[in-house]
Length: 310
Image 1 (cartoon, rainbow, N blue to C red):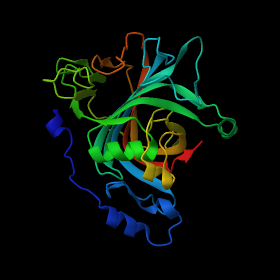
Image 2: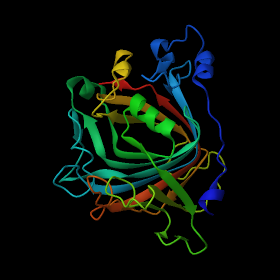
Image 3: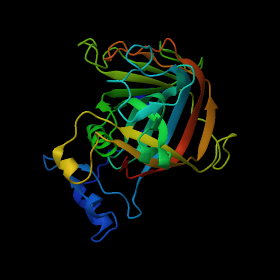
């Protein structure tokens, strides 16, 4: 099934005014109820009254791999710089767990959009206060989304290294292949993604999907639970808007927050390492990645906590 028919995209946007009214005066979120950018644009709708952001994904897939520890002199994903100060990779003999993910968001604070990311390692925050709280999680070194609103919101609210590009999602044909890219599941990062890409090639990521599994709610394969809460780390960006910092949003700092997942169905997928990435700076090299396995979640209700600076 091609990109145009993979899923009807609901063209819906929520205004800042409506979001602020929904929370209501006197909501417990206080100053976080409504945040404006320096251009008087809304980049972060308020969380719900219980202090979480709610998302819904039609489909979310994760591919886990054994990858080299991030660093400027190693293959793998060094990111813009080595891991931010105050963050340490959880590794053994120079190797850690990383991977890639794809999410087809049906509903979010920024409307529907698609998201692709690369995970460079498992990491733990090393400041004393963070160690005491056990702040750890998978570290996303690259994030691409097909929505400018989600790019800005992800960077400024959650400190994600998000950029905007085209994301195509194709289901495999009868032979299990996706066009000329190979067998699904797969992720190919086009050479046009990044400043070294060809100017005649539009920025584009190709996600190859297996046909959607049909599982009744609650019938999740072992060992996937029906309700799972995971820790998460992000932040460490180089710049933050001064007005954001004034109201308590500083994406330069390490941020910690929980993510709660409640999938309606799930499948275990064959392992796959990404391909491409020649146009990204620093150049992405997946040659040393060792695929483990993948997981696909369907009809996922997701709650994301408000980030706390470590």
